[in-house]
Length: 429
Image (cartoon, rainbow, N blue to C red; front, side):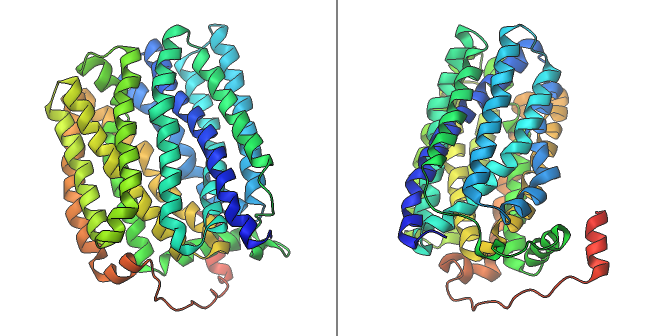
């Protein structure tokens, strides 16, 4: 392991790599649905495209988490970004050749989603390796800011404008973003393999079981997973239909859709900047509840208005609030989970939370068939407002740990080995 000062200095390299990859992601997140909408306007197929990109988190997040607890996390990110560059580069060639179809997009989204489970999990696991505990909230805020700037503030408009020029251009730029992200990681010095991975690796099933059992034994972590899962599920009902909402219900052009997303980017930046300040000035649990309620108010309002300016401002409110939620939950996760278990615990978290996103997307598409896209936004917003009340109840018994990042919790003993019967059960599930 590199010297501690060098590892903390690695935050800059991590941010630079994240900036490049998120710019590529931002371009792709606008270009993919636009390309999909150019070949079909079926809301189920469009929502299914979003669902497909998240499906790998349900299928592979646990395995990816175990992987990054066994290898150097920087190298895992580097290989993942290089792989994404190759896949998107291949898609660019096919789009240039006029061979794009909705099923091709489904296949590419699935492959990219599998690789993303490794890249994103490794990036999250690197955070506590490059900053001290008291810098976690600031580091998470910076990473959220980089993600927002890349994906919505710059990537969204760039994706829509370049797609309007010619369809393959945004995917070519996406490829360049992943190449740059990989190059930035080459310059990151030191070893980032978890200390517990230094010896012979444990059996994979035993490692998976340890992560599952660690979460199951901690009520606060289970409650945080529930909050994240419910918010992801309820918000994705409408989020997956955002492109149809903008193009059909608001009457925006393809180029204007990127500008609509830009307002969301501004809101997200404000949320990332505000989250550490709010948590310092107010009880963290109160900030969490208020942010979830603001998410619901934003989507509920979007379902009730038809004016593009009002809708974009409400989308900005949602974006700001959801970033505050992400910063708080991410900081709690980094503070409470031991480093050598982080990948596996994150795998459990992402399997549950991101696995719920495809379900939300598909349900949103089906709902839109019956009540229309604005109606789905109303339902989504109402469910998130109800969730805010539930959040207050489920964290009330752990308020001190949430507000202090578990600073007063004693060191916990090592987990005993899982018995053979439990391992067999895990292997079959």
